[in-house]
Image 1 (cartoon, rainbow, N blue to C red):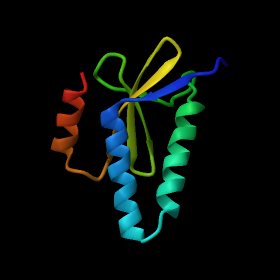
Image 2: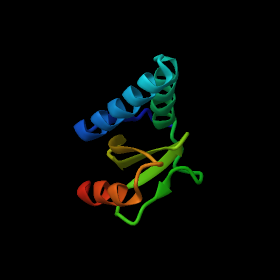
Image 3: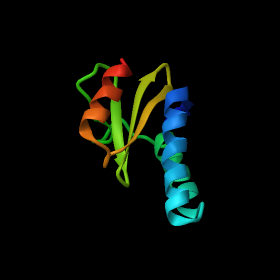
Image 4: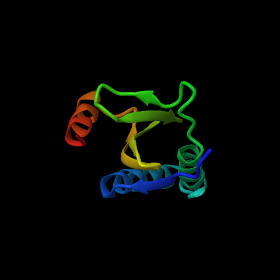
Length: 104
């Protein structure tokens, strides 16, 4: 399998920062946040398009996978994964839909 580059859009970086900050404050420790971020990065790096993961969305060339209630939406082009949105699935579904529509 060819090596893929993973590029995070600014919005996705901010989303991930907010999620990790929330868990750091809630747990009073960076341990879980660090582990979550590291495992999501590893999942992106080793993504296998030949199996069921990732899932397609209704938006063309937009895929996602879920890890511990965190959905990572991304596109794939020229051997590069572009992370567009990172969402905690327990958020209000209407706000999630707005984010997805905005990412087009």
